[in-house]
Length: 148
Image (tube, rainbow, N blue to C red; front, top):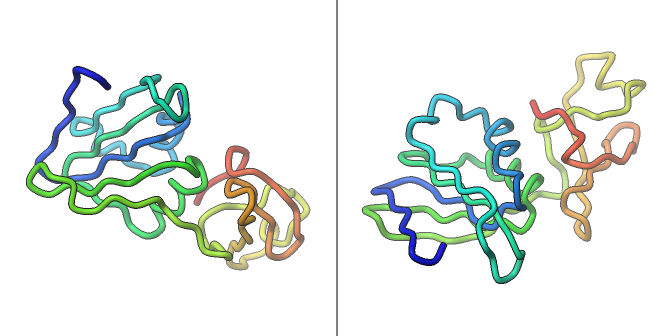
């Protein structure tokens, strides 16, 4: 972003999103009401990634569930919280070992698709975007999952 300035008085910047994945992230976060106050930068030059996406949300801060969604779709992302135009906190989103009420198992024969049971999946520490259904142990990626 050399030579460009992206500022907001208060809000959140999600940086280091894999290139061209920011629109999918916005869809999963369900933040359409913030569209007039959201800045999307796609395909930006990155020293570490080669290319990356960046999203600036004015006046919004992620919930714990939002952070888990970001961690699944953009495992190498950084969340930057802004207040009065300054970064007050910078951190990577984290996933617990067990995510609940976040994604639906992709196995059509799983009990979660037939009965009213809580949706649970275990995360893989070595491969953050890989999930294992708590009930049927079906393995699936965050990119193929349906988010609640």
